[in-house]
Image (cartoon, rainbow, N blue to C red; front, side, top):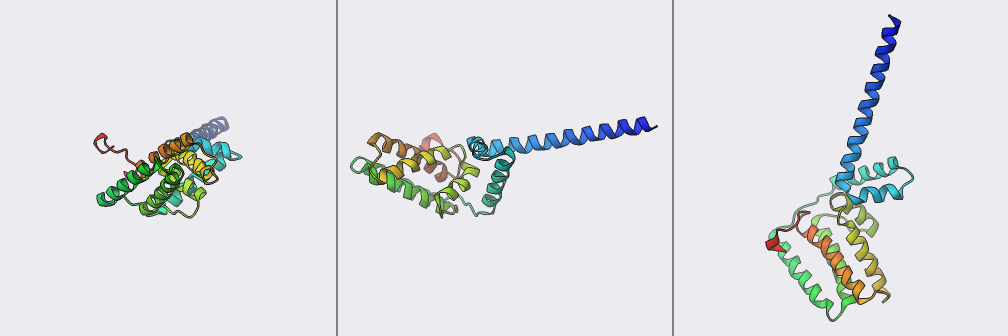
Length: 183
């Protein structure tokens, strides 16, 4: 009789362990899918995977509390015109164009409902829906900073415009990729 109780207890413990492992794995998979490359970047930057995943869940909770809204077509059209002007400015004043691209992306973030109080917080807030594009924003922002002290080459500035455009397009189209006819 006591052998049966021990066997049942061991089986129950194994079942609980299996369910717990499955739940942790499922939650980790969801975070990886949601954050894309930002998941691994956050894990590398933290002391443990558990701390990184906690931070990512906190980002998600903060993001869920934001009032992120799609842009109406006329507002999108205005931003497209603004972006076209910024690109045209690049030919004669590449430094200014990159600074203006940064300003335009930040303004677009604000219009969508993202807080724009600081670069690090922008990265965290954007990472929830735009984790796959975030590296573009980081690269563009770094070049923009170097451009402020005239330490970026024209080719780097051109790259910054491409990087800014990647995030700009994603924000403009509410996270969806534009159809080919819109590109």
